[in-house]
Image (cartoon, rainbow, N blue to C red; front, side, top):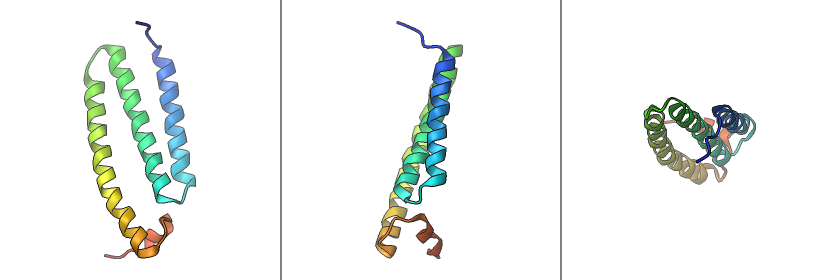
Length: 102
């Protein structure tokens, strides 16, 4: 099996994180915002996996499992927010969420 240099994996993780950050900063649609956050978390998980593989320790895989659990919790909470914003404002614009009081 061929080994991929850790530099290449970290560059890919950095590019994915940058794309996710760009999506968070530029997009106003809450669905695109959530997808950008998922891309950022997956790029961090990729960096953890690469670092764990580099030193031969399972720590990177354990951290990735925590990231997956965090992503699942984020999706569950975000679905409720998306449904509430969609019903109340008939839009998925992030600025509409500033009018939610509770």
